[in-house]
Image 1 (cartoon, helix red, strand yellow):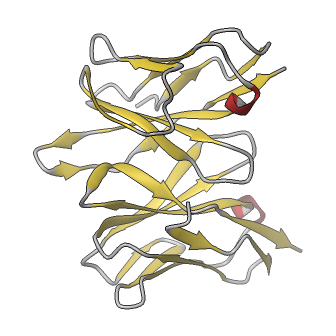
Image 2 (cartoon, rainbow over the protein chains, first blue to last red; image 1 turned 120 degrees about the vertical axis):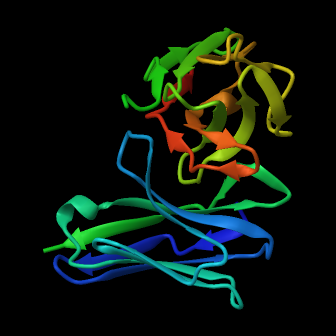
Length: 112
Length: 116
C-alpha cells in the first residue's frame, strides 16, 4: 500500500541489532503494528503501539513512534537466524478502524 | 487457543472454475476479516464481519467474490469464474471487539490459490 512505506531489504550480522523503518501518511492512525511473515506462513503479530505512545519494549523488540514525522521503527536486539523473515509495518485509522493497511514488507536476512 | 485455521492450505484450479475457502477464527473472537496478498506485497483488505453481519467490503471485492459467516463462527469466501489475476494468498484474521475498542487481528496461515 502506498500509504505505508518500508525499505524492501535489510541484511544484518547475527548478534547485531536490526532496525526496520516505516513511514505512514495518515495522521489519523490509531494503532501501528509490526507483523512477521515466514515463508509459506501467515502473519504473526509481533507487537503494536497505540498512536498516543512513543515507545514500547517487549523483550528483544523495541518500537519507536515519531508522530510528528509519521515514522515508526522496529528494533530487534541480538538478531538471530530465526528472525529471518519479512516484516510488515501496518496501521489502522479512525476512518475505518476495522481494516489494517499494510506496507509492502521488509525482508530481513541474517548473515553469519 | 488454537489460532485461526484456514482450509485448504493450497488450491490449484483451472480458469473459470469456482473455489471456496473456509476460515475458522479464534473461538471467542467476534470479528473476522479476509485479506488478499499477492507476491511481494503486503495483504490488502477485502471484507470483514462482526458476528454474522458483513460490515465493510473493499472495492477489490468484485461481484465474483462472496463471503459469508452464517452463524457468526466460521466463514467462507467463494470466488466464481476464477481468473488468472485471482492467483494470490487469501488470508483470514480474527479479533475481539467490544464497544469502540478493537483488539489486534490474528492471522491464519492462508490459502494459496493458483489459477492454471
